[in-house]
Length: 107
Length: 107
DNA sequence: ATTTCTTATCGTATATTTGCGATAAATGAT
DNA sequence: ATCATTTATCGCAAATATACGATAAGAAAT
Image 1: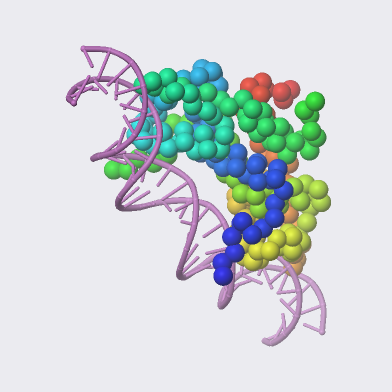
Image 2: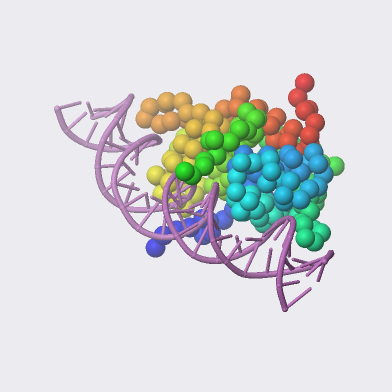
């Protein structure tokens, strides 16, 4: 019987941090987030253009960021406008801050 | 001809962040780092005991953290004392801080 | 209803990650 | 030289991640 990570107890914070870290664990996704942050919002096509990658590949990276909660998409037919998910972004920021500083610097 | 991430240009910062994020992308490794941080230093055996995982599995996680540069091992035969790698820890801290805050808070 | 545009999803191939038990390696003590 | 202790590494299996091209899905416009 193989054990999986699911059988192990982790604090909620730990699980969340791992989830966000996983989303950030690829240079393409970091670049996408940096781009989104600088543009405030943009369409999938804009993002596809800054990478020498297939549209489907970029779409998959966007999906992962969305599933992790770091971005959100808004329908603007026929396009989709992507933005940083501010609430979760803030949460990730606080998690990483506390982790590295061991001081909770938020309010 | 398959394209790989290696053919794409990323800023040095981006690559480094992805590398650190990858190391943090597993709850076990986050827990190890939290433990190391609280104990300042400890032996492999101490870490093995806090997880219901095989010794070889924990050793592998430690190796990943070492390769990423977040921890370092010091020979204390027959044991090995692991500590946070302060220099790289600081670097990661700064990278994540700038990333989330878009302000470079270090001096 | 058909066409156009944009983006997501499917199917597939390959590479990497995660876990285990078994074994090797390194050192100190007998 | 042998043994005990501790930790790393090897070999394997299963699960995930990463990339692609091809196709589907959705909405607006004709």
